[in-house]
Image 1 (cartoon, rainbow, N blue to C red):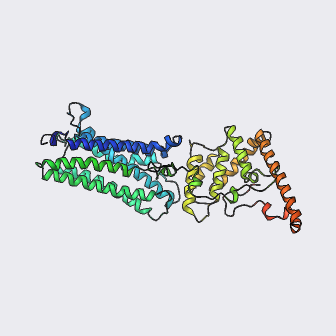
Image 2 (image 1 turned 180 degrees about the horizontal axis):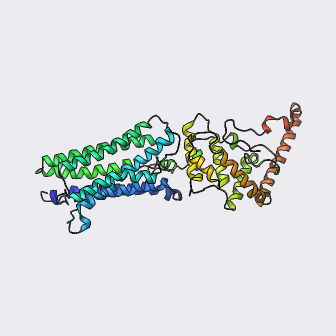
Image 3 (image 1 turned 120 degrees about the vertical axis):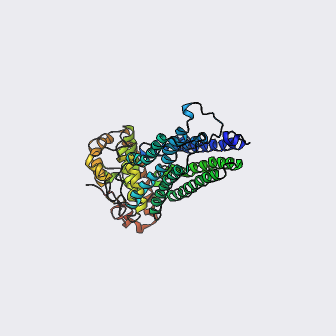
Length: 460
């Protein structure tokens, strides 16, 4: 046991290595589960690459700990066994630094979106490298000075400077998280962030204490073995606690490995609990009249579904899907800013930003107005975009729809429903004479009821 305490490869080391490998398996399983369970398409933009970088940073951090403390007894004969590669570069800028920087980027986004109610002024692909610059600079200085010994340890001066850098980023993480603690998040973002703050703080404290104990009691073998084992264990807990979908992909955060049944929301509106009433319910009207304004016809749920199916068959359905989700946004009260921001951010990421999965064809000026809006909860955020898209639909899809089989099918179903309704109404009139004085035009249940406070008003 005395030899392996220095060279590695003790039984406790292999137990620690097994725990690290199992943690990596859980991390990869948790990240891949939603896509394998529901065959979801891989999202684009920061909603994908920030979680992907977190997985990479977690992998780097665990592997660097295994290699730098020599858990599996590797002789350092080649350059890729170097302490400076694993204990400096992989563990620092591309491990803990990258992992914590990704979480800071996510908190930074949440702060601007839910507190400032606007999109962040600095994009993620710019902000993240700026956060990593101090880590790269410190790693470069250490690589030039060569302060590491044969067992990948350095003097107290260097360890102190590294501890200050680690603590600084934890403090930044804590400060940003505290600045959004008053927001009523819907997908456990705040809970995950506080858990990350707690575990990362504990990890930094433990790493410093372990180093001090090893320096003071250099000849005590069991302290070396215990600290090495607990180092791997703490790192495994750290990566599982810091990694979470909720800050960047709220819908995927509801899908859990721990639940027997997969929980999946088909839309953000469903996840936010937007009730299917008001504008979303089918109007009790006769067959759609092509002389009516299109925006008025699209308020009819059955007509909208028929028109959407036709548009999808023409590979041009993103405008109708966008229109429907804006209608869902209009269902939310104007004073419910948190849910409105969730919905608005979802719509922007899905339809507005350049390269979005279902990017809609709107003018550059309108797109920039939405992206640079000072209030994501504003009731008219997408009003201009809706107007532009309706004009395009009228000149393209609408004309073809009236001649399509989709409209003929919708018309047949509407006619059969109207005929059945007339027969039922006639039987009702025979039974209850008082109802015969109520004409269809005067019946309030046959009017076009619009939800008050909606973002979308009929465009004449």
